Amino acid sequence: MICATLALATASFAQDAVPSAPETMVESVEQAAPLSTSVPEDTSIPTPQLEQPLIETGLEGHDMSPWGMFMAADYVVKGVMIGLAAASVITLIIWVAKTMQLSGARAQANKALREVVKARTLAEVAGIMEKRRGVGAVLVKAAAEEIESSSDLAGRVAPSGIKERVSSRLSRIEVAAGRRMSRSLGVLASVGSVGPFIGLFGTVWGIMNAFVGIAETQTTNLAVVAPGIAEALLATALGLVAAIPAVIIYNAFARSVTGYRQLLADVSAGIERLVSRDLDRLALAGQAPLARAAE
Image (cartoon, rainbow, N blue to C red; front, side, top):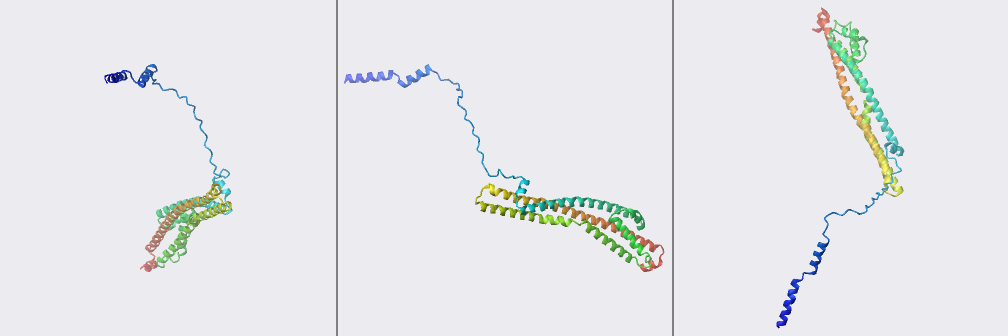
């Protein structure tokens, strides 16, 4: 028993005295080769970048510019586009022509109004406006002609009849001038109201052709669908391009023509005042028949 106890104690002492093998190996490795803190150089081989494969859409053979779409469009769609382009050109021509016509007419009417306001008698303004042109000059000449035609009645009858005849002639001249100035505005109104619907007709026809192409080829490939739809939408765009400027120009000219008519009405009112003054002066000059008629 004593021998067994001594053997166990000896074995325990030997186990405590000798360090474990792994710890001894780690310490020896650390002493022999200390760890380096420097980062090793990157010696990896760069990976070559591969080019992205091109995606074929089937549209390489189609010219998708506006001119290319027009040339590839159906004959009906081409006719719609040509008509809308012609309407745009006509709108531009009317705009330029009416701008020049209205500007000149307003300038002449303003000059006539200034002369009528400054004049004291109808004969005075008639002498000034004799060699001038424009509707204002025509109004003055018409009033002078009516007074001359009624010269045998002046001072013999009431002046109301002469005033009515002068006013009638002036009003008809105003109406004719306004109608002449409003000419061609109906074309702008028609283009502005009908243009979008004509473009829509071209769109419907082009989309119908696109669906017919799908049915014939039995495929929904983009190369079959896209060109026809693009051509159809181009017709709608041309319809809007023709209609929008036409509506804007029509509204602008409608306001300008209304102002021009009011200017002519001012000229006519000034002429009527001159006629009324002349007749009153004639009555105050001692014309007894006219004075008795006025009473």
